[in-house]
Image (cartoon, rainbow, N blue to C red; front, top):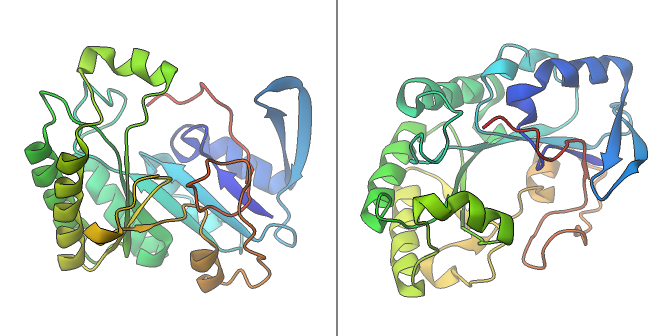
Amino acid sequence: MVISASRRTDLPCFYSDWFFRRLSEGYVCVRNPFNARQVSRISLDPQEVEGIVFWTKNPLPMLKRVSELPPVPSYFQFTLTGYGRDVEPGLPDKREVLIPAFQELSRRLGPGRVVWRYDPVFLSPDYPAEYHKKAFAEIAGRLAGYTDEVVISFLDLYVKIRKNVRDLNAAVGEEETLRELVRYFAGIAKQCGMTIVSCAEEMDLSGEGIAHGSCIDSVRLKHLGAARLNGKKDSGQRGACGCIKSVDIGTYHTCGN
């Protein structure tokens, strides 16, 4: 069993103390997001957990306690973009706080256990393609040597997302514009020693040097020591998602970012 901690919320940022309490007690109770009456008890016993994948935009509250993580393969998906407070008002300064936090997390865990996410990518009057090029290049340069992979994806305009981004005038962008942009990303990533992959993208970006990625990644987990993984695809995710099956222990609508 692989634990996702969590796609639904920023657990390292807001609930790290809770998480370590659950580790000490050996289990966590999780509500079904589609049926609040259905609660599952999930074991956190290291003998049963084959890996843990953390998702965060700010790991600082957990950073001081990473030495307490259980002896199972684990890594962080760390989202770090060039957007300002109009898009991510809950985050501290990225240049002064979050990039150094990424670097410190990598120093403590190793670059193979911290994956950089630059996503979702959207275009707007305030964030045109040239802005993303500069932001990506700056962040990549500072993260060189601190990670071996960067994940990108484009904004999916679901109904709830449309409402949230209406005031930002956010748009996905024309396909050729996006392809030219990610070709640039791929070149920068290569210069900085990073593999670049996409997350759940239907668009084939192989011509731009970008393969389909897996956020819950059996290859990475096995490399970190998860020898028992069967690598079965997670049927509960989107068709283009390459993730293997996991159990998410988070709750929607609880992320302060």
